[in-house]
Image 1 (spheres, helix red, strand yellow):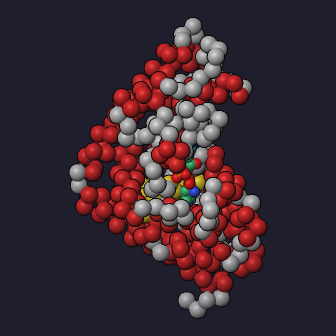
Image 2 (cartoon, rainbow, N blue to C red):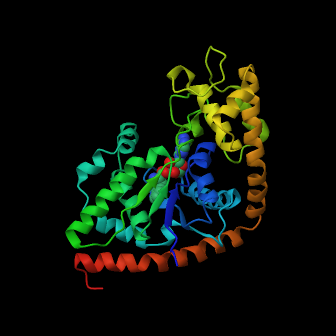
Length: 333
Ligand code: AMP
Ligand code: TRP
């Protein structure tokens, strides 16, 4: 019997999930559900590393669960749970804190970017990658499917695991980050020089398409998408073509067509046509997701039940690794 690889990934219940989250992460989680032993986590402990309004956060956690289920995460095939429901994450994070040099955390680019914008930086924000390492290592995950922005955090996870294993004996599997070949970094529609992000999307109306946006909202964003002063509709890494390239990338991932097919399809067409067609494939992708989302939100008790059951299973799965880590550092367990 071959055992299936363990996949772990997480998503923060902050802001609204956008098409970049879907393309870089969630779409793959769903597509590969049958291949692996899957564990997906709504990381609320990570969310509060930046202040969140408590009532908004509570709503966003349920919304995140419903959106992920609506995207096709199947509770029969995958564990989908909320991080704070499983105390082992915070417990292991503490133990890992004690083997992680501060310098490793201060070097993280995401920390540098986020902290540069703040007057007061929480310890949690600096410690964020250690908690992420705990998430992954608790389940002895082999693969971590994420977008490009998380690559450095996965490398840190491996370093922390390796250091722990060296100091205290073999305890953790070293995970691999799996970054998609296409769509690992969807850029803002308003500004294709910056990564599409939930925080920018909450301030800039035309930055992103949210997974719950109506067809009119999708078109309002796409209509204004930044392109360039040329007219060639081709895939290109040239900075000047970043807007067109981003639109084509979204189209490629959502239609599953090859780059050659797509370039042929758009040959001789105008940017306006490209924007309309990209909007249409997004609208088509979102329609069934939104229908399922609306149905799931009708019954919050059922949703909470799914999360509760999954948390119990996750806790059971996390327990042996946490115990081993405690034993190996010398605790009386
Ligand atoms: P976050 O929004 O930071 O919770 O990210 C959730 C998942 O979506 C992670 O795997 C990210 O790497 C991925 N992701 C976030 N933004 C993008 C983007 N603009 N393009 C591709 N993947 C993304
Ligand atoms: N830091 C990730 C993000 O913002 C979310 C996350 C938390 C995560 N724990 C994880 C992703 C573990 C993969 C594995 O996207």
